Image (tube, rainbow, N blue to C red):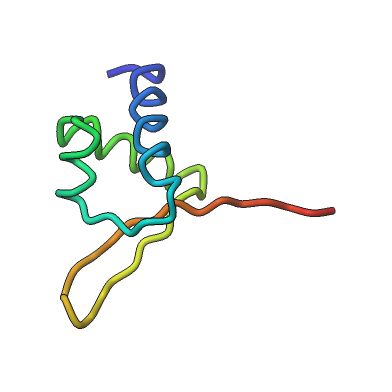
Length: 74
């Protein structure tokens, strides 16, 4: 897997996450059509770019991932 492939997978995930919805891993995998390896690499890429927010819902005992837009006004 090379950098361009990971970046392309990250773009697919970012487009799905851009609607403000919380996604579970399985839901995100099904919607993206990516393999576990590609999805994990994409999540890692976006996390490194500080574009993801990870949350836990205690009532459902589930973890979710959301897209975080970082806008700086200066």
